[in-house]
Image 1 (tube, rainbow, N blue to C red):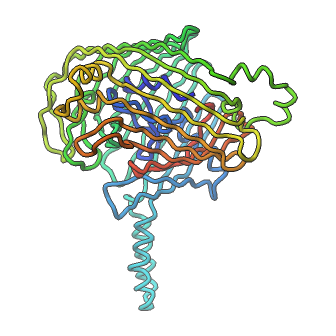
Image 2 (image 1 turned 180 degrees about the horizontal axis):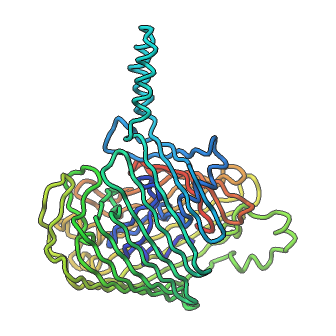
Length: 467
C-alpha cells in the first residue's frame, strides 16, 4: 500500500525527499506542509552506494541526472560517476564526482569550430583546455559510513559545487533498539524543499528523534528535538515569497502519534495461502512486494504537539534576498492529521506482459484544525494562501502499469481539491513520472528513473524493499 506513515514522518525535519540538487541525492521536506508524494520519498540506500551499484549497468559507470542551476549557461544536464571507493566489512568510503557538459559543448560549437575554420589549431586547443578546467563545471562529494555495532551506523559527508559558494556538510548517527529507532542528524547548511518546489537553505540544522516501530494494534509514536540556526535563504531567486516559519531560527520540541489500520476487500495475504509453493518457485515475481493481486482500504489518524523556544523574532530573507519581517510563530501548536487510502492491484507481476496494473488513491488532510475551521467558516475565499494550503485536502494518485518484463511505468500525482489565488478549482499540484526496472534476484530491488516536471529535476536511484 501507499506510504501512510508519511503523514507522521513529514511532520518532522528529517524526512528525506529525492533531489538531484545535492550529491547525497536528498533534501529535507519542510514540515507543516502537504504530505510529499510517495514517488518523491528518497531511497534509504546511500547515494554513493547507489552510484556504485547502478554504474555497472551504464557506460563507463556514468549516471545522468537533471538539476537546474542559477547559471543557465551550465544547463541542467549533468553526469555523475564514482571516482574512488574503499569498501570493507563495516566501513565504506567513496568519492563521487559530477560534470556539467553543456557549457563545453556550446563553446565548442561557437568558438572552436570558427578557429578551426581559420586553420588556427593551437588557439582551439587552448580554448578546450580552458573550458575543461573551469571549476564551475564540476562538483564533488566525499562520504563515509561506519557501523560500530550491528545495530548502529555513523555517516558523514562533505560536498562542494563549483557553481555555488561554500561547502555542504552532513553527519548522522543511527541506532536501532528492539522496538525503537534513534536518529541524530546535523547539517550545515541543510537544504529543504517546500510543497511548491522551492528550495531553502538553513545555515545550521540539528535533529534528534526517537521513533517507535508500529505495534500490532497499528500504533506508532515519535518524539524529537530540532534546532534551526541562522536565517533561511532561498537557493534560487523566486517571486519574493517568505521562508516557511518552521525553518526560522529556534528550538522545537515535538511529539506525534498515529494509529494505522488496513483491511483487505479481497486477495492479499488471504489469497496467498491458496498459491502453491511450486508455483512460487516456478514463476517468482519480479518484486515480492507486488506479487499479490488485491483490493484494500487503509487509513491513518494521528496528532502532533510542538513547543518552540526562542526565535520569536522571525526575521528572514525572502526569495529576492531582502530582509523581511514575518508573522510571529506560535510558541505552542497542536493539530490532527489523517489519510484514507484505497488500493487496487491486478496481476502478480510474474509474467512478461499484462501482469501488473495498480492504482493507489489516498485522501490526505494535513491539518485537521485548519480544515475544521474552514468548514465552520463556510469555505470562505478571503483566507490567505498559507491558510488555504493547510486547510485544503489533497488527493494523491499512484498509477503503475507493467510495460514489459521487469519494466513498470509509474505516475505519482497530487491534486489540490480547492482553489488558490492563481488557479481556480481542483488542480494538479505536483507530478512525478518514473520508469522502474526491477531486479528479480534482489527480491524487491529496482532502478528508478524519475523526472519531476514541476522541479525540472530527474535522476536514477536504487531502491530496495521500498514501495
